[in-house]
Image (cartoon, rainbow, N blue to C red; front, side, top):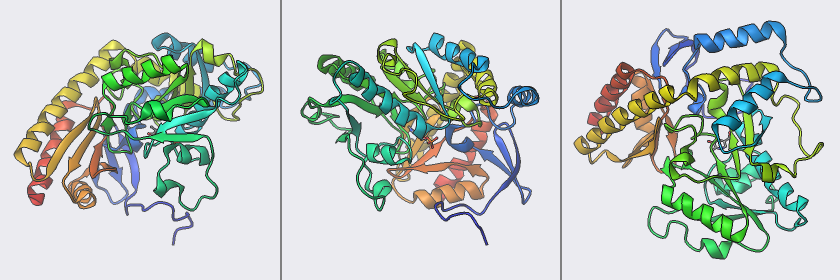
Length: 392
Ligand SMILES: *Cc1c(COP(=O)(O)O)cnc(C)c1O
């Protein structure tokens, strides 16, 4: 009997401890963990540097109110700004909080320049921005919003299609009261669908022309997951607002909103807050993650692992064309789109000691730690090959 609410369909497995890419279950089995808490544990389990960072900080200071200066947060914000387009950072605790805060920043900006009616956010239908009330209505997915009462107003939707035009009717969807377009660079939950660089550029161009803001949700694709610090960097665009979370804490809950100076002007004292957001314990871990994953050498390694993994997966696709439809994604955010049988496929991978997780459109999502070893990728490939054989 479990006293936890039944909002998850949990697998009957639990873990004693983890080390790097591996998890050790309570029934003494060893699993290759290519879920990593859904792109959260950027450096795998129990990374010694992160253990040290949290241990040291835990002896000094866990939490103080944001009514006071927090030097650890100042440090992390500075690193994030020096590494990216951003001029200012606002810390939160999760992805949904970060995307909500991003929406607040966009609306508040227009309010602050005397255009309070410019407050609608244009999002991609069936994208994913988290599970709070605003975030589910931002995504507009029936499955996530059904039964949760009146629609949260202020969101419009466009389609994102693999065919051309990729954003049909987008110009017509931008109205006088549209404040921002919000997209994920790579739709994670939505099936590891990447918005091509050209299309991101196009979105930036439209936003400039219509004088609205571009919010790029990098909660899953960011923090070096794509092989660049942010996935949108490849397109050379500069967004106005970027929510982040997942990977930045390496397993400790951290969210943040990155923004330009222009839009930050609306966020005057009292406009937003968070009790836990940016506390010294979280920030110490975040600083350590940031120092490691943002270096050029680290990013080059992610790219190298990614190239190898994609090459081999595409070979499997050619070998089993009736099983694998498409290999999707970028960096170490990888999707194997199957023709059918996603749930059973994931179960068979797990029976063979490889943990993966689903995404929409029949996709098996693969999220290794960013410091994954070549031989671990090979172990995974062998298991995937074996399971493909069963599905021919
Ligand atoms: C996971 C995710 C979120 C929500 O993050 P939570 O920490 O679960 O609230 C938001 N946006 C994207 C793109 C995500 O992948």
